[in-house]
Structure formats: C-alpha cells, structure tokens
Length: 504
Image (cartoon, rainbow, N blue to C red; front, side, top):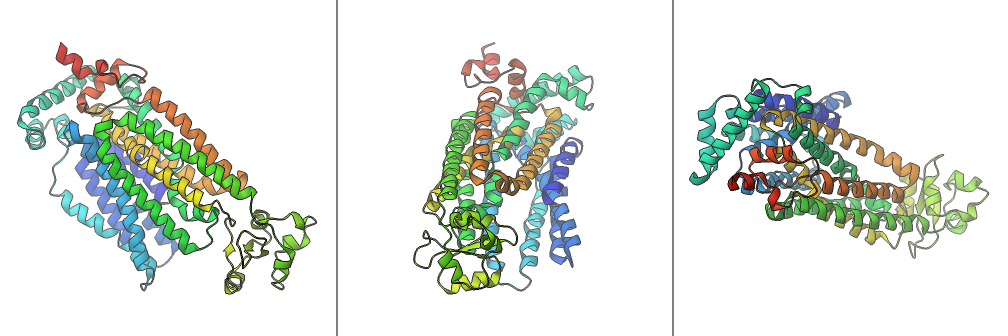
C-alpha cells in the first residue's frame, strides 16, 4: 500500500511541482510523511495501519521526484551530478540506518510502534529546515519573479558565471513563450509534440523502468529470503547478511558521488549494467547448482522423528528419489528439511513444517530449512549478491534520478519528472509483487536469468537512447536533445551545443 501511495504521490507531485513550486511540494510531502508515521504508530488495528502506510507512500512518491529536481535546479552544473547523488546516498544510508534502528527496537515494549513511529522525526526535521531554504530559482524565473530568482542564482554561482547563467535562463523562457504563445499553457499534446521532451521522456522513463526491472528491489526487499535460498538456515544470519547488503548499497552511492561528474552519466550506466549482467549470471548459476545438488532425504533420518514425517513423502511411490528441494515443494501441509547432525550436506529428514518440529530439529544440533537447501555454494551466492549491489548502486541506482532531474525543458520539468517517477514506482510494484510467484513457478535460477536478460536490454537502451549530460548547463541540455534522434555518439565533444555556440 505504501508503494501504491507512492505511485499516486509521484503522479500528482509532477503537476504540483509546476503549479506550486518545488519547495512547497517538499513541505507537503514532509507533512504527509509525518502524519502517516503518527497514524501508524498509534494504529489500534490493521485498517488504520494501512491508512498510515498510504499517507507515507504519498509523501515518499512526491519527495522521490521533487528532491532530485530541487537539488538539480539549485546546483552549479559542474557539481550538479554529485549533489543529486548525495541525495541517493542519504536514501541508501537511511535504509542502512533503519535496519540498525529496527534492530535496536526489537526488544523494546511496543516494538513495531517504535519502528514505524520514529520515521516521523526526520520528516518533521526536514519540514522545519525547508522553511529556511529558498524556492528553486529556475521555477521562480519561469513564473515571472526574475529578481527573486537572480538573488538566489547569485548565491549559487560564482560572479564570473552568474550573468551567463541568468542570460541562458532568460533565453530559454523567452523561446518557450515565443514557441507556445504563453509561458503558462501546458498540456499533454504539447508535451508529446515537443521533440526535446519526447526524446527526454524516452530516456528518462526508460531508465526508471529498467532500474526496477533489473531486479534491485527484489534484492533489497527479499535479501533475507535470497540468503536462505542460498542455503543459510538461520533467520538471524539471513537478517545480518541483508544488513551487509544495505551497507554495500550505501557505499555504492558514495562511489557515485565521486565519479558522476568525472566519468559522466552514460559511462557510469554502461559500467554499472555490465557488472549487473555478470552478477545476475553468477546468481543464476549458483542457484541452479544449489537446486540440482541438494541433499537427499533419508528414510532412516526421517523415521528418527516419530509421527511428524511429511505426509507427501510418506505416500510418495518414488520417495527414494526425494531430495531436499522436493521436500520443500510439498504443500499438503508445508514441509521442511532437517539436516544430518554430522554434516548438513548428507541425507536428512523430511518433516512437517511448524515451530514445534523446528525446535525438535534444533535440539539435536541439526539445521532446519524451509526456503532453501543446504549447499556448499551458499557463499558464492553471497558474492554474487554483493557484486550485484556494488555494480548497481553507483550507476543504475543513482543516474536515473539524476538524468530525470536535468533532462527536461523547464516548462515540462515537473510534469515529466512526475511521469518518470510514477513509471518507477509502478515498475517497483510489479517486480516486488511478482518475484515470489515467479520463483515458485520457474525457480530462483530462471528468475535471476530473466533479470539478466532484461539487464542486457537495458544496456542496449542506454547505448542507443541515453545522452551524456555531464557538465552541461540545464538550458543547453534541451538544445542537445533537439539536435539528434539517437544518442549513441553523445560522448563526442563536437556534438555539444555549448561548444558550437561558443565557436559561433
């Protein structure tokens, strides 16, 4: 429900950004998030808890597209990418911190109320701090408040650059008015008829959709499950290892801050996706080996536990061919695998899955498996998972948001950013809701292989359709998009419009 709220928040937030300004939308987002956290923490039942989640989702959706937009419009071109990447780092760093905070609250009275309620404090803090910050100078200029915009721009840019920046902004707005007849009129037909917007949306929406369909939130949401699928039985171990995943995600965002304005957006995306493809190939191979080489089920080990044998195993005609994976797929009722006490890779017992049986298994110093099977390849899966995060985070984790904050013409920036963010959250919902079903239907190995194929498609998309915007003033990105249909040669310096204009 939070993701569904985010879809609506991102869609409405795009229109609100162009109508009311970036700063006001962020204040509204903070208010919604704070209200949602209070509702969740005080909820007497599930219904009100869900209402709180929707409020939080609305706030997250608005902030997800407004924050990078606001930062981008208030940043000098040479460090714009690094500052928007910092926003990404604080998100992933916040996710890591939330794991630690939740861990601290696990033994506190009213455990989950503290976990969801504490989220209201950063929202309240940001609301107060946003009151001290100015509106986006580019939004102010477009709304006819030139003097207020100039005052802010003079605080952002050094003296020798500010007049050129003001002149570029003036020319951009005047060109809009001349082309459209009014700087205020805007609709979807004009949006699609404008070449720069069309090409910008192709790149921006494509990046946001591919960001989700290469499987990142599957890894983040289900990392404890994936760790168990790789053969680690303990819930605590799985949670601790998923904490490492969150830490690597935050580290990758730091790498992005350093490289984004040095290497460039497009090169970082290509390096990122190449690594993601390799990592997903490793994960697919590891899970294939884990599935096809799981320990056998032993009648001797199973009969050691009286009256709790898995019914499907007892009635199976080919029970001698049963292995751990066959046992875990039994569903009437669910069954679990209790490993051999001497070596987890030796034949074990197939038993009914419940907490009592789990405790009986543990009392005999055996390991209990319900999601994945014992495997000597478990650590290889963790290496694949770590590589995936390390490659994904600096490129595909940060760059789609950076590109969408700078690639659209000023008059369409809020609306287009909202469309792209909505596409991101909608894709997020599809992937998150389908992963476990897909895993059950075709297996974990094939699921990761599908993500790998999608990543190859994403790589081709980036090479062909995504422009390089490193170091370009925001107003000149529009001129670049007007100039070419395909962008596979945008790294060539001769194609940069600002260089052409200087030559002229």
